[in-house]
Each structure stands twice: as structure tokens, then as C-alpha cells.
Amino acid sequence: MTRNAKINTLLLLLVAALAVLPLALGLGEGKEEPFTGADAQAEAAITELDPDYEPWFSPLYEPPSGEIESALFALQAALGAGVLAYYFGVRKGRRQGAAAAAAEAADPAATAPGGER
Image (cartoon, rainbow, N blue to C red; front, top):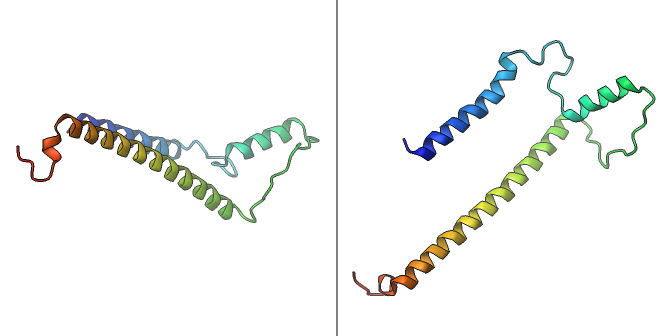
């Protein structure tokens, strides 16, 4: 197993552990909605401390249900992953192109039509 394969396997196991451990340890038990986002938890804490608090701003768009909100969040994550994948793909392609150009400049006979080694 190569070094990169070992690192990838270790990272995959770490991600799986981060997903499974909170469920296995029961970290959300006893709560009405155990895995709500940080925004909802912050809102609950603020209203507990100051029941008369009025927010300064309101959302531009309030989805009609939690499922639609989750779908929009997943779409946002997918678009972000796509942008990152595109960036790293372009970067790798440029690096490979530069390496090929450098190799051609060093040995033009290797890439010339009919050139033999």
C-alpha cells in the first residue's frame, strides 16, 4: 500500500468516526431536536437569556419546510464542491501541460513526427 493510499484510508476512517461517534455515544439524547444547526441553537440560547430580544435582520427567503431548507443547503454544498473540483482540476492540468512543454523543450526529437529514440 502506497503512502497516499494509507493517508486516504486513514482520512476516510476519521470521517466515518466523526459521523458515527456522536450517534454511538448518544450525544443528542434527551433533546427534542438533537442535531439542529448552530443557528437554531444560538436562537434558543438568546431567547432563553433575553425573551424580549428582537433580531436586527430577517432572512431574505424563508423556505416553506425543513426538507426544502436541507435540499438548498445540499445544493449549496454540491456547488461549492464542484467549484473546488474544477479549480484543482485546472491547476493539475496546467501543471501537467507545463511539464509536457518542458519535456518537449528539453528533447524536441521525442515528440517530433517520425522521431525515433
